[in-house]
Length: 569
Image (cartoon, rainbow, N blue to C red):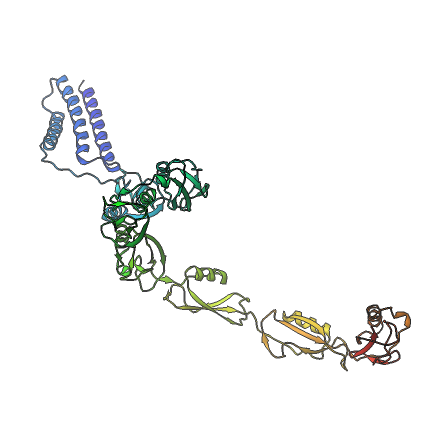
C-alpha cells in the first residue's frame, strides 16, 4: 500500500512540475505579465496542495512528511502573492507589446518606435477616410511582443487621391445643395460655379460643360439659374472664417459683385476668408462691391533644412501642412541618413501645401567590380557618376572590353569626381602599302589583318587594271582591327576608238536620239563619256546631229575622256 501511495505521489509531482514549466514557457512566448503567470502557478499550487493533502489524510498512519511541507509552502506563496496584489504592494512588470497605430500621427508613431529601436518603413497611400500623415495600416499586428519586431512597415495617409477617376453624372436640374454635397463627398477640387439670369426655379443647374468619367482635379463648369428680378437688397452676413467657395457662392447667389485679394494669416486657415470690406448687417445689392481677403495660410519661413534631421523635417512638414517627397543619393561629405539638399533655401517664404523635395544621403559611394562596360555605364548613370572613356591598344584584351579603371574596387567616389575607364581597342594593326598590288592580293592581306577593305575604280592610266593606285589610310598607320580602308584601283591603259553610228540611230526628237545614242555608245565605247547638248537649226529636223557638233562620226575617242555632241532640238 505504501508503494502505491508513493507512486501516486511521484506522478502528481511530475504533473505539477510539468505544469510549472509550461507556465514559464507561456510567459516567454506570449504577452502575459508576471502577475498573471504567478496566479497560474498559484492556482496550480492549490490544486496540487489539495491532492497531496488528500493523500496524506488517506494514509493516516503517515506522519507529517515532505509532501505535507511542500503543499504548505505552495499555499503560503500563493496567499502572499494574492494579498500583495490586492493591497497594491507588489508591482510586477508587464512585457511591452506593439500598439495599434491606426489613425496615429506618423511622427508620434516614429517617436514610439525610436524608443524601442524599431526601424519604421514608411509607405504612403491615398485615403479618403484617414487624415493626411496619419497611419491606417501596419505590417505587424497590434499586441505582438516588441522583442520579436525589428522593422515595422506603416501605411500612411497621403490624403485623398485627386487623380482618381470618378464618374460625374449629368447634373441638369440639380439643386445647389445637391451639387455641394456631391462635391464634398467626391473631393472635387475645380468646380467653377456661375449664375445666369433665368426664369427657371432659383439655383438649379441649367448648364454643365462636361460629365462622365474624369479625374477629381479636372475642371467642371456649372451654371445655375438666377432670376435677377427676384434679387432684393439684403443684409450682409459675416463671411469671415468661411471657405472661399462658400463665401463667393453666397455673394453670387445674391447677385453681389466681389473682388479677391490674398494674404498670409496665422489665425485663419488657407482658402478661408480673413476679412471683408462691408461689415455684417450692412445692406448690399447688385451695385455693391465686396472685397474679400482670402488666407494663404500662415507665412512659412523655411529653416535650414540641411541642418535638420529627417525626423525634424517630417515634423516641420506636418506642423505647417506642407507636402514632401524624399529621394536619396550618395554623398561622400554627408552622413548616411542626413539631408543633402532641399528645393527651398533658408529664409525662403512659402505657403501651405507647398511641395518640399528632400534629398537624403545614402552615405559614401564606393567603386564596385564590373564584368562589362555596359554594366559599368548602367551603374554610373544610376548614381549620376561622371566618367570618361580612354581607348588603348591591348594585345590580350578584346576590343571593347575594359582594361582598367582610375579607381580601385572599394575606393570612395567623391562628389563631382570623374572615373576614367580605359577600354581596349584590341590588337594594334599596322596598315601595309597596298599601292601597286592587285585586288586579289589586297583582299588576302586585308582578311589576314582583319581590316575592312572596300574598292572603287579611279581613272585610266599606265597602271594595269585592278591594281591599287591609292588608299584612304596611309601605309604605316597604326589602326584598330576592323578599320575601314578604301582602295582605289586602276582601270588600266585607256583604249582608243573610232566613233561610228548610222542614221538609223537618230530619232525624230532630241530626247529619242539622245536615248538611242547613249545606249549604243555605252555598249560599243565603254569608258568613253559623252555629253549631249540641244541646239537649234534652221533646216535640219529635230533629232539630227547638228552640223556644228564638236564630235561627229569618224572622230577618234579615248576611254576616260568626255566628248560633246550637238543634237538638233
